[in-house]
Length: 149
Image 1 (cartoon, helix red, strand yellow):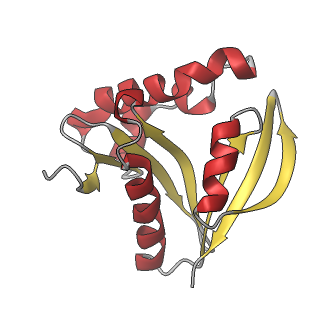
Image 2: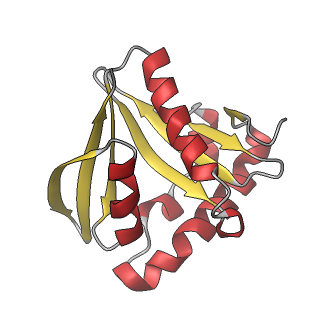
């Protein structure tokens, strides 16, 4: 697999998906006061359901996507901290747009915790607009959408 290739995850990737997700989200545990939802996901089930796409060998980044009738939901994006600054996240976000277009979906939606301020700076740079801010259990979430042309 080429370094830039993004491919569907397979069962053998499940442990790497968990490891990269945990490494990416671990710094937020103390800041937000709860374990981020992606760290508690059933990674093997998501891989088996075809929701996970990975990049790198070994895996250094991934997205978890859910198809809906009117949008593609970006459930999680994770880049291993050791590879920050190498364009992995940018390539994954471009992949998400391309995937939505290939599925004929007009927009991508996602949310992030309000205390994950880094994300709140990144998503608008990629065309995402804030839809709403909402408390959901212990999570203060900012919901975004990106309309695709």
